[in-house]
Image (cartoon, rainbow, N blue to C red):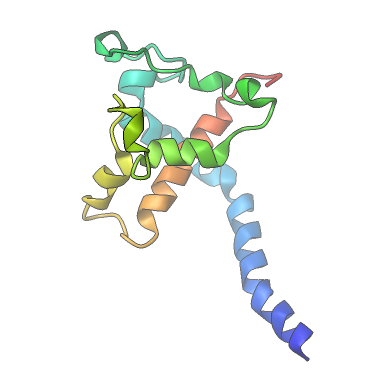
Length: 136
C-alpha cells in the first residue's frame, strides 16, 4: 500500500515534467525574446559575444554557442542557470561584469516571486541551450 502511495504522489510530477518537455518548443520564441531583452547587449543576438556593449567590458563576454563543446558535449544547464541568476556567486571571485539577473527579476512586480525568477532564468538558459553549435 505504501508503494501505491508513492506512485500516486509521483504521477503529478511526471505529468508536469512531460507537459513542460512537450511545450518546450511552444516558448522558444519567447525565450529568444527574453535573451534579446536581457542578454544581447553584451552577448549579441546570436550569443557569440559581440553585442553592442561588449567593447566596453573589461573581459569580453563569452561565446555562449560553444558551452556544450567546451563541456565535453554536455550542456551545463545548472552552471548556466547559476551564472544567469548570479545571486549565489562566490564573493572571492571578484565583481563580475554580468548583472545579477536573479536580483533584477525579484524586483519585477510582474514576476511571481516564488517560481517566476527561476522560470525566467530557466527560459534564458534553455535559449542558450538552443543556440549551441553542432558537434558540441
